[in-house]
Image (cartoon, rainbow, N blue to C red):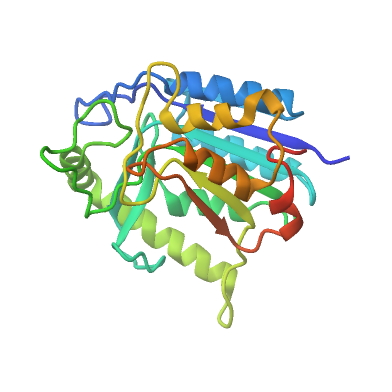
Length: 275
């Protein structure tokens, strides 16, 4: 019988000592993590919940590696994140990002690169079903909101001037991290091939050039997801689930469905969160 493990990170703030005095205060992210953990538990998952100060790089990485060691083909991982999103320059060009930026999850102690997440997902056995839900901003360099600069509250975006300030402070660390991740990927791939890709379904709160809204109870994306899910009454696959969530949000925040690797068609047709 397949097993399901879930990891839920929700950060209502970050450590101001690690972010140059910025605490990144948000309202609904811990609620998002609790509600997604409750959904997962009802669907038959075991859950790990990392709230604010517990949502560090080391603890998230440890939870992912523990799950990778436990899950076998046909098992399922559910990873949800609710908090700020950010970006840093991609100095290696390993991802061929059109905007030359790596997206980040703004964890309690530092930003966690998308390449780091990709490395951890690559550690899962082939055939493990992976679902990732990200309720945060993945802002591109071309974001513009008419009439005013981006606000620092109400959206889940690490303010761009703050991103630049912290990146300049930690430039050496991030450049070395990006190089080491690229080298590790090349070692896995060998001289004649590409590194094996994990097969995962990602549904994110918005497009790369958009921002995601916070809320009083849930983030806009998580609230729409829970509304669509209707306590388990939803029927349909991941594509229809994504479309239904998308239909409940404004055009300025359009959730993205992104497939990593080659998830089997049967997986995509499954009712979401099926263990």
